[in-house]
Amino acid sequence: MKSEILSVKEKIGYGMGDAASHIIFDNVMLYMMFFYTDIFGIPAGFVGTMFLLARALDAISDPCMGLLADRTRSRWGKFRPWVLFGALPFGLVCLLAYSTPDLSLNGKMIYAAITYTLLTLLYTVVNIPYCALGGVITNDPTQRISLQSWRFVLATAGGMLSTVLMMPLVDLIGGEDKAFGFQGGIAVLSVVAFLMLAFLLFHHQRTRGSAAEYHLDA
Image 1 (cartoon, rainbow, N blue to C red):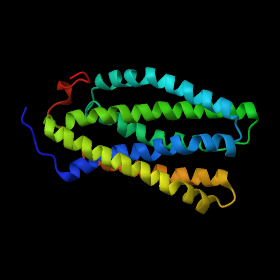
Image 2 (spheres, rainbow, N blue to C red):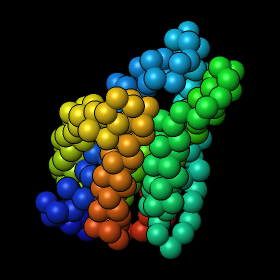
Image 3 (cartoon, helix red, strand yellow):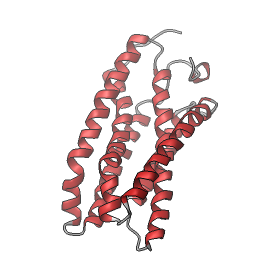
Image 4 (cartoon, helix red, strand yellow):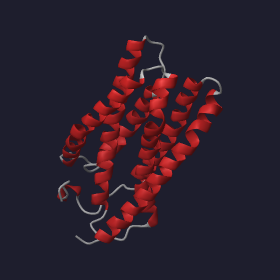
């Protein structure tokens, strides 16, 4: 199969996907514990256990998602449909995870467990196929290295953007009402992440060669 040189625009378009993921993922890693314990009022021990169980679930869901995506057949290829149809639910569930419904303590813990588990599963649904997409954009090893380099640079930039903007957004939107501020802040960042994923999808309408020729173990 003949290799093609990827343009900088294509590389940036692909890297935008990981930038979007890290805007949400890094935010969750940095602020979710504080949000649950200090804003939502859930015991730290429960939150830590919930996080641990979610990581254990990832160990199962990640390879399952990889196999499912690898067996997908669609007009958009194997991997792009998962990113396309998973992006909006991912953003919406993130907003729900940062919401503070008026519930009893047990109700809050159940709510947090459900929304956080859904958030981690939807992250898997979007991120695993996205990572695999890099393998079918080009078959040239040099281009793949360059593509992944852009991806890592933009992922770092996305994480830094989330880190720098979240608390100022919380203060700006919520003022003294930190719960509302967190909801507003994550809503703004979710919109930014969604637009980045849209940029990825619109700037990669084709892959190099047939995706049917590729498998995750290739």
